[in-house]
Image 1 (cartoon, rainbow, N blue to C red):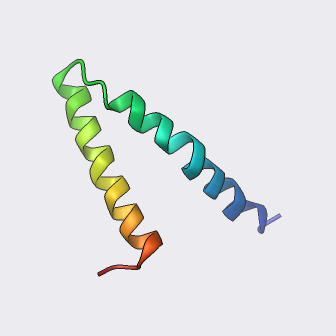
Image 2: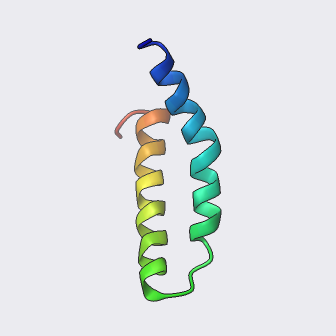
Length: 55
């Protein structure tokens, strides 16, 4: 069962994260704006780690 975990995580990252970014890109309140900024920061850190390691 363990080999399925990386597959599920990669599918989650591939499908749901871009969708959540699109939703958070439409700020309607200061709280949503803050959430959108935090999500962009986290996605940037995640992409640095997965693409080229920490630089």
